[in-house]
Amino acid sequence: MSKPKFALVGAGVIGKHHRLVASQLADRLDLVAVADTDLSRAAALSGRAYPSLTELVEKEDVDVVVVCVPTGLHGPLSIEALRAGKHVIIEKPAETTVARTDAIIEAQRAAGTLVTVISQHRFDPSTETVLAAIHRGELGRITSGIASIDWWRGQSYYDSGDWRGTWELDGGGALMNQGVHTVDLLVAALGRPVEVFAYTGTLAHERIEVEDVAAGVVRFENGSLGVLHASTAANPGLSARLQVHGDRGSAVIDNDQLVFLETSTEERLMGTTSSRRPVAASDPGQLSDAHRLQYLNFLDALDGKAPLRVTLETNRQSIAVITGAYESARTGKPVTLS
Image 1 (tube, rainbow, N blue to C red):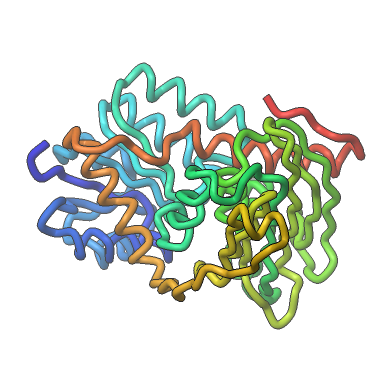
Image 2 (cartoon, rainbow, N blue to C red):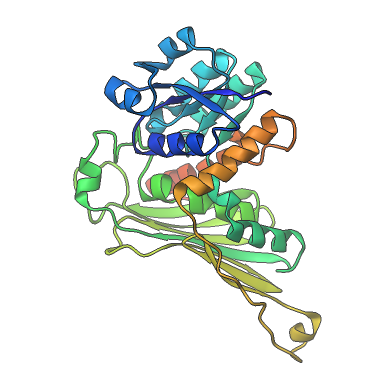
């Protein structure tokens, strides 16, 4: 496709990051318009501002719609764009439930266009190094993994918007909003999740419906086990961390940096030698840098030069883990994931 025309829906904090990415890729795409219920915010990002996606699509010839609104609105806007024949980029996660995600998948199949969900940390050098090592069998059989998000959000964070901390628009708390990226990396490393058991609590914040602490265990199709820990109640806030363990080696990514990678030679397995592969620190990068790499993959997929690396089905697995954890916490029982 010759230089595709992009439209951005949602001019808030994350919308501004997508606007930055578009400016960095001005040689590959053209951001022609922005829609937001606050026209002044939309106009600040683009001279051609509209109060709704409906009006934007009626008046502008665009190829791609980028959805950057609260999570609970992703589905209706994505489906509207797909029914108009547009390709779609959705900021994480795709939706608040598996059923709503499936509705987007159905609309995409009917439209025959491309949809990706922002999972930019799959494109981090640290992630690519670890996943490549797993693919080559260097960690052996993957036995377990830990996804831990130890963050702090003050009460003012939740009070800053009526949608924050609500089931309808946020879809969840520390696990869905803050933890979804690390859960996604756990799924990327360990494979298809089949069962989850979890507890959640709201322990350090007021006036929110969702959890600020979650802990759980995930069983994967290959037999490996994963541990989930997500918190916005860990003052002063530490890191997002992924650990992957196999019977021949282990890897640790901390705040997007590869901080540990050790794989075993046959000699070491027999106890005759011990060595650790040197790990060069990977740059964590800015949010826009990570997004830019995923945008490049999306643009290459539009041109037929590369497969789309993150699809709706990819993101659906992470949403299933998180919403399954919520169901488990409500019922006190393990939840089988479809």
